[in-house]
Image (cartoon, rainbow, N blue to C red; front, top):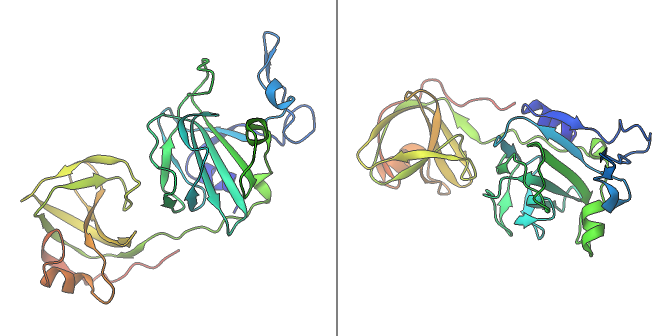
Length: 265
């Protein structure tokens, strides 16, 4: 799968496609309004895709990698995140994000982790519609601002492996927290926080996950399905044993394991 199809599968729609510009040249856009060419800095080129879902929609990483230099709240493309993937030989620029970025330089991320929120930030603080600018480059440091901003490769020629997600068990039960735990949209520390489970609160769950070295449960009720981390996953220690040894961040009760482990894919 190429990374643009990945984003479309996540609900994004393409609003600017470098394969379809009237020039007939890949990336040669020359977007002009009232005589002003917004692509003049790059000699008329826009070697990237623009996509949109909704203002402040979470933007997932199309592939894993390391958050690299160029990532900044006030970067070349406004709120900017750069993710480098040595194995794939690429780096990915996510631009015009809300300035409250969800990652930091040096952080390792996985496909699907949230890097930021779709927004309308930019270098010059000019008015623009909310959208995601996504640009792909060959792996490695690019010297010079103009070269960094203007270079880009065709992402339709990139095959990204799909991460089939965390290990999952269809186990059900109850969990009573003994500390404050952040509630997340999905089982990842990169997912947006949606509140707190306070000490002593008993929650019902219908999924058990392992992801990012943590045990996660999917809570039910309260108007939706959210996740919390309930302890560190230790080598050779399964979930029931971790509970018995008091190595979780609370206690499990009424555990039903009859539905077994979920199949991936």
